[in-house]
Image (cartoon, rainbow, N blue to C red; front, side, top):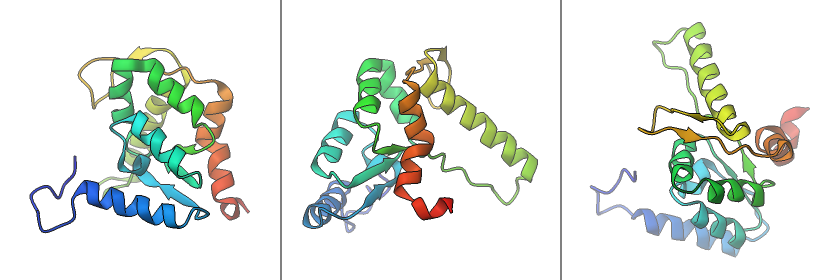
Length: 164
């Protein structure tokens, strides 16, 4: 949810998104990574329109998988088709951070749980529960090539110097 709605003196969500889109339109060769699905996580169709309008943009899905799962509860094939169509422009991310009160072992355990649950969603057709939703979600059963791009290939292309 947009957290500034109680502050009318601040630019609205739509104003912020429009400013971002104008900047990208003015700089069509800019390499841009939109974190959290470019803050459009609530609608894969709108995300697709954003990607179509900005061919230099890539998106990270960190901390937005619950919103994708919510949409796939209603129309799994639409979400699956989105991942297949935009497979070259999406990157997996978890957005996990270790709290000061959490020891290393607990953090690694939490990270493993999240990673395995996300992997299950993308790789299998299993139905399972997730903490964000009150009904089970069915995995997308994405093709291996799409999963490889999501988890590794696209990030290596976006940030080649990081792997040297």
